[in-house]
Image (cartoon, rainbow, N blue to C red):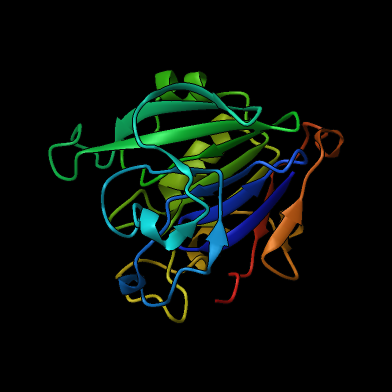
Length: 217
């Protein structure tokens, strides 16, 4: 399966069968435009326009924005409620965490998770091969909190998202603050926006942090 970073918290997930999923499409008020992509499915973690701009995605996709279990195009999707803040949703409401099984690979997109790491939530998500997690703070968990999730979930690969890039207009932290919490030998910088995974790629040993380039418009 392939993962392409479209920017912010949006990814294009592609299964070998051809099924395409776009996560959390965003409005240009993020600071840059969403790339033009088609999808069969769009998953939305919450209703803020930097995560729910579904009209930016072509192909007349099925939209999933509620908790539940789904199977579409041969892909199993589990959508689970969580909180967008550390006060049980009192500040920013709910957030949906999505877990996808594609080509035997378990991918988890944490959305705009804001609640502190806890054992019940972590156990409900495991096992995870690839973890997509916000690290920028302010509106979500910050780098230190994200590292706690990583340590507890123990994914094979973690891909940071929702952080300050040169074009981003949001008051959030850069990715460096998250990367500084890992040993250099466990950090990989991808040469481009897309990476491919196979079930056989995962050895269950160290977690690798994979930093993707954003797909240009």
